[in-house]
Amino acid sequence: MNPGPEPDPQRNSRALTLLLNLGHAFDHLALLIFATAVAAIARDFGVARWEDLMPWGVGAFVMFGLGSLPAGRLGDLWGRRPMMLLFFFGLGGSALLCALTQSVAQLAGALTLLGVFSAIYHPVGIPMLLRHAPNPGATIGVNGLSGNLGIALAAITTGALVKWLGWRAAFALPGVLAIALGFAFARVAPREDGAPASRRAARARALPPKLLARVFAVMTVAAMTGGLLFNLTTNGNGQLLSERLHGVIGDPSRPGLGPDPAVLGLLLAGVYALASLAQLVVGRLIDRVPLKPLQLGIVLAQVPLLLLAAYAQGWWLLAALLGVMVLIFGAIPFTDATIVRYIDDAMRSRVSGVRLTVSIGASSVAVWALGPLVKSAGFSALFVGMAGVALCTALVVSALPAEPAATVLPA
Image (cartoon, rainbow, N blue to C red; front, side, top):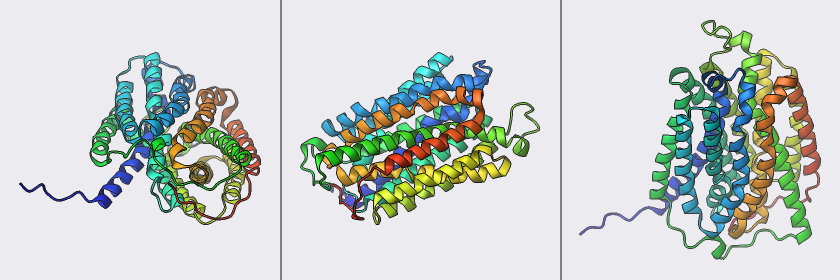
């Protein structure tokens, strides 16, 4: 009996890379459905203002941070393949659960569960992707682009689905697709040769313990402040554009309801898609130049653009927001690049988990505070405050030790 052709390892590797990058896209897409559809959900549940409903989504982001610690530990000690299967199926199932909720409290619980499963990807999927990457910076850049395209898809698909099928479909369709990706991953991902913690790993660049602790502290604090900017913008940009573009793209058939959600979603998706390209550029630069001056330059450039966006109106706001998101997205790859450069593969998931728990757990307060802050002070004050946060990030990054522009091969 002919057993058939042998599987092509290279083709399987490409398929696995594709699925891991798609997983990053779905991770961010799922987390931003609520923020994009919050106005429609508020009307459906009888909540007077979207700002009053927004804090109910904070559970997803709290668990996105807190869940990273056990996820990273299990990824290293149990295995990354089974954890990624849990990610795809759990994310899809919890998104479907969100679509079935009948009250604000039920939705808050379902979103919290979604946050538990979404926490798996970053400490598990990215180290899995980087294990054999010859050019870690470029790989991180492509992966970051995928994640941010998920943010763009959240804007455009959620806006369209809310308009034509309702907000429940905006959760249900990605949920079904995530489960389908889980079956594809189960077929493509090879069985592991033992958990990462049990494998011999090539050593990353050695640093004295005190200097390594300093690098970890700077990386974590910078990720926390960067996460604040990321959460405040990605969760608030839809409502910001709705407010500032009301007279420009308002829908006459929707008096009092603001711009057409499909048009608004298309504009926001365009901003995110263009801004995502910054990660490709930054990823390639990471392989060629020292981290510190590159990261410092990007973070400092955020300050004037955030101040400009604070007061811009109409199409000028859209241009300023594009610049802001280019720089916020462009700053994302530095954390994973630092981990690859200094941390052995055998413990990367655990280190990522600790860092994510601290940084995302702290920055998740942005989701809880966004609605009340905008309601009391407005978007202008919010963006001025974010410029201050960016300045604090630059001060933290300046404490990184200088290092040569050398690339470290991952384990």
